[in-house]
Amino acid sequence: MSAISLHAKPSADYDQKVAAAQSLLREAGELYQPLTQASSLGVEDMVITHLLHSLGVKSEVFVLQTGKLHAQTLDLLGTVQRQYGSQRAIRIYEPDAKAAQTFEATNGKDAMYQSIALRKQCCDIRKMQPLAQALEGKRAWITGLRKEQSDARAAIHAIEDSSEKIKINALHDWTLGDVWHYVKSHNVPYNPLHDQFYPSIGCEPCTRAVTLGEDFRSGRWWWENEAAKECGLHVTA
Ligand code: SF4
Image (cartoon, rainbow, N blue to C red; front, side, top):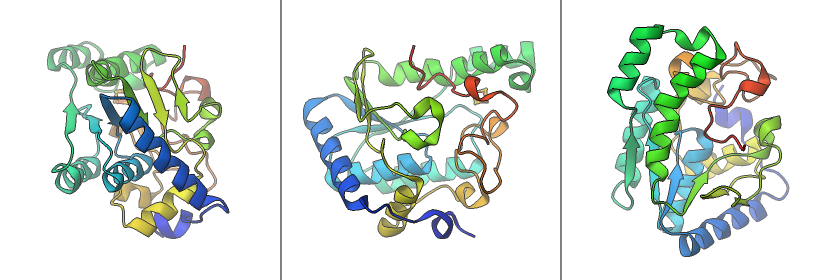
C-alpha cells in the first residue's frame, strides 16, 4: 500500500492551510533575504520545495549530506537537482571528513548505539556543524516541522524569531493527511521509503520502518527514550 493511498486525506480546512502556507512563503521571500530551505528530503520538505518553486519564491534549498543517507534518499536528491536546480541553488553540505573519520576510528561505526552522548557527538559532526555552515549569512530558514509530529514540536509557531535566525515553519498546522493530499494533487516526487512505512527518514543507521499506529518519530533513534529524540537541528534551548 502506498503512502499516498494510506495517508492522503485532507482536513476540512485544507485549502485555507495551503493558502496560508503560500502567503507565508511569499512574505518570507520578500522580507527575509537571504533565505534558505532546510531539506531532509522527507515528504514535508518535498512539499515546501514544490511550493517555493510554484510560487517563484527566491530561496535556496540545502541538504545535509551526512554520509549516512539511504540510497533512495540520494536518488531523490538527484531528482530534486534535476527538477528544481535550474531555478534555484540546491546546496549540499557535508561533514568535515577528518572529524568524521576520526570519530569512527575512535568509537566504531556503531558508536551511536552505545550512548546518547556518542550519538549526539556523531550528529554534531555530521549534522550540526554542516548546518551552521548552511545557515551562515542567512537571515531566515524554512523548515517542514509540523505540530503533530511529536510532543517536542507541538508548540512550534509559523514564524519563530527567538534565535538569531528567523525560522519559518510553513506547514506547522498541516496534518499528515494534508501533506500527502498535496503530494497526490501536485505529483510531488517523494522518497519511496515512505511507501515502506518510514514516516520520518534520517540517516540509515538511525532510521527504521514503523508499524501502523506507531508514533511518527518512533522509527528514529528507536533505542533512545522520547525526550532525547532530536538531533539538535530543531532543539530550542
Ligand atoms: S542520525 Fe545517526 S548516523 Fe546520522 S549523524 Fe546522527 S547519530 Fe550519526
